[in-house]
Image (cartoon, rainbow, N blue to C red; front, side):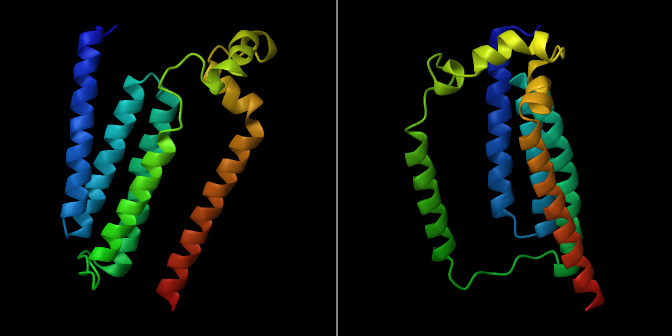
Length: 179
């Protein structure tokens, strides 16, 4: 078990690397370098999820974020080129980012505090899941039991959305090459 003071240091280190990597992605004009940096960002996020004791989310982030997304970006770069074109209106993207960031910050102000015991997620179904998962499902890992059993149709829907998006990307890439 890692001591708490080391976990805090690991958190700060990972967050620092995440910020540095995100800034580097935005600042580099070479799209190949940005793609590799995005893959590194995904791996850092996977490490962050692992530190937060969410190994299933960490594996998904590593597989989808660092693996599949990187391959799709690299395939797109083969069709488009590796250098970013200069924007004709550089203020417009900045304005969109500022408006979106402001909306997200405003929306986050209404959320309960992190780990607050009286948050809606903790007062309604969480207790039931924690108490009944072992007897009803028989799977020792509560997160796996929730995703596979209680939320099985949601998970199936999410898989179908990702599958459909992947097929659409493959069809678009195939059309581009043959056309």
